[in-house]
Amino acid sequence: MPKSHTHMHQHLQMPHSRVDLHTLAHQLAFKQVTIIGNASGNWQPATAGTTFIFNGTQWHEKSTQNNLIVNIANGGFAESKYAFVVQGHPQSDLLTQALTQVAIELRPQLGCWPSSGLTTIVLMQQLSQHVQVQVQRMSLFPSLARPSDLPPEDHLPCMVHNWLGERRIAQTLAPTLDWPEFTLPPIHLSNFPATDKARGSQTSMMMKTDNPFDLLARLQDSTPSADMSHSAKHIQLDWLITLAHTPIDVWLKYADLKQVINAEALFFNHMPESKPSYWYLMDTQASQYLDAIRHSLAYCWQTLSTKQNGTTHTFTHR
Image (cartoon, rainbow, N blue to C red; front, side):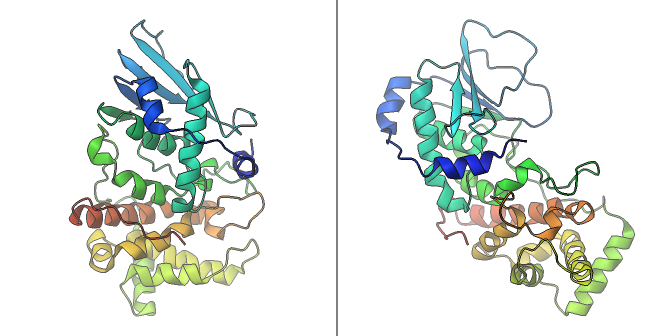
């Protein structure tokens, strides 16, 4: 597995020349842009314009003469010294520079290196302001549920990104894009066992609170560690189960934008090769509850930011 984010942090130590994006937009003159993510499902390149894919996504038919298919690879994935590798575009060097510039600017807003998908969306929105950008097979919400056959010492590749933060940034762009998969519905809790629901209710009674952000604050008070005691893990598992079963109307009752941002740090580790992770990110059982919690947090942000009439919020990530 390429240690791509170790690679990114090494890359940040290098000097980077800036690209004037306004000038680049005139040079590239995109007429139509389609961005294809790596989620499941069939897809085809757009019949016209430029189609962007990631890390060599495959399709079943050859491209037509009316379109251009451009592959963007993570530099570590592609075993390159650069942050990104762009293939299939006559201005690939300039696009590589522009992607790197955007990623560096996004990094402090996320607390980590951004995904190639978000970086491309932000760049294309800046380069194609008068062109409709379409995004397919991408919700910026990959699962943190560890499969049972993943070795205990291996991290999920997606764990290195702050997906809640990426959705926070993308929320300001989504209304200007053709991106139906971005909008989240409220989560349905029927998939969890009844015993989990009872365990969660019992925890809420013991904690004497129904505010899910109180439990998130308790998780934040604990330091990521590889050697947390069994009893401490058991207690925190109860908290995760409770949070996963909390109805969305309860989340919305207590949520504010700053609390949602502060919770982001609980769900990623940008340098798992060298920094300890929260134990539940590396635990098969506990990780099964994380998607439901993140979904509720993302839905809170989606709802609250929409109520703010699309205002851009600039709280600092911590």
